[in-house]
Image 1: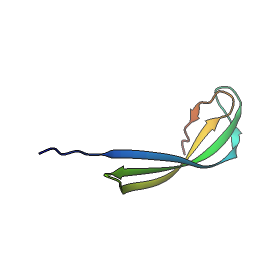
Image 2: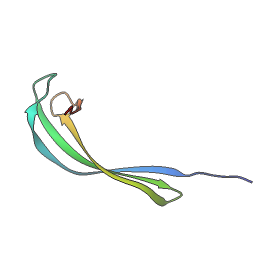
Image 3: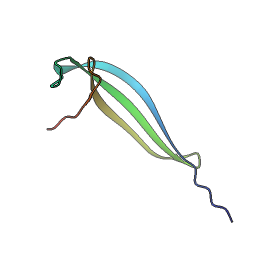
Amino acid sequence: MWMVYVCDEEKRELGRKQASGSCPHCGGKVEATDVETQWRLCFLPMCFKIKRKYFCTLCNKRLVLYY
């Protein structure tokens, strides 16, 4: 008997906007991007998340916030 697990991750960009501050590496502008992630198992949605990620517009590095 064959058991096949079909897992899929779908990412979709919801929007972008200018964020406050500057890049610590190059001093460029920071852009906030909202990303929707959806995990599927055998075409059934298992997990749904919306995250905000920050990127520099000059050096394209991903920036991490520490509170």
